[in-house]
Amino acid sequence: MDQPCIRIRDVGKTFETREQSIQALSEVNLDVRPNEFITFVGASGCGKSTLLRILAGLETHSSGEILLHDEPIDGPGVDRAMVFQHYSLYPWLTVMQNIRFCRQLKVISDTVYSQSDVETASGRADALLSLMGLQPFADAYPSQLSGGMQQRVAIARALMPRPDIMLMDEPFGALDAQTREVMHDLIRHVHRLEKSTILFVTHDVEEAIYLGSRIVLMAPRPGRIDSIYEVPLPTERHQDMKLEPEFIRLKREILSRIRETSGVQTDLEQLQRLTRGAQA
Ligand SMILES: Nc1ncnc2c1ncn2[C@@H]1O[C@H](COP(=O)(O)OP(=O)(O)OP(=O)(O)O)[C@@H](O)[C@H]1O
Image 1 (spheres, rainbow, N blue to C red):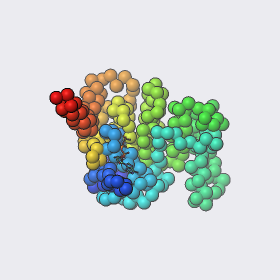
Image 2: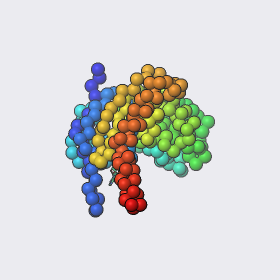
Image 3: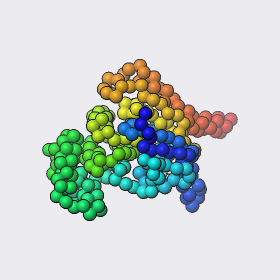
Image 4: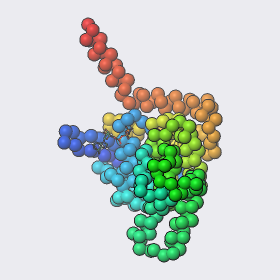
């Protein structure tokens, strides 16, 4: 079996605000193997985004250790790309310019500005444009595109420097149900083709099962890993699988565990007690 490309050991994160100290993550342990597609689910506030941001190098952790290819993470790097829920494209650049933007930065920062670098980058940008079905829109501006198309540009831009690891924080959260299904099949296709490792945060359990090979369920207060599920589906997926008994059983099990760990039930019970008290 492949060695893990990411090792997360006893990781904790505490945010200190003026009023309080928030333990966003506590004793998180996880090994990620190359080319895995891991999805993260869990109640609001369980630290999913914080963990992703730490892996992206956008946030530091307070305790424990995170190794990426046996090296500690010490900031963002071109080996990791992040895709957010909001498309975060540059509105003044065309689709093609947005896709090439990151690569241009890398070429300039490496000061290896040769013709062959530029040609390789152009070829890759063209390939990504066609992979995302965006060729007719190469010269369009983001404001001229639908949400789904903008997110395809954001994914193409993230893929441009050939990152080892894609960190995706609810990338399809703002899209309608039909567009999401199209994006699901597209991202599975991209994963097969590009062979990158994908860590994907979502609130949608069906999305988590359909996309992931493993599902990490996190729980809040403090944010931690509660359980990990292997997805019993073949690598090749199709939408009808969502109707299979095994898929529905896993969805029920995960949804029920999220409810149990979220504390919402406890809040409801407290509310009912208070209401009863007020009526007595
Ligand atoms: N910059 C910050 N400063 C203070 N507290 C923060 C900060 N970022 C996150 N938190 C807190 O850390 C906890 C975890 O937040 P995080 O956004 O990682 O959870 P999440 O699981 O992604 O939530 P959601 O599903 O609602 O997006 C929450 O209690 C949140 O309020």
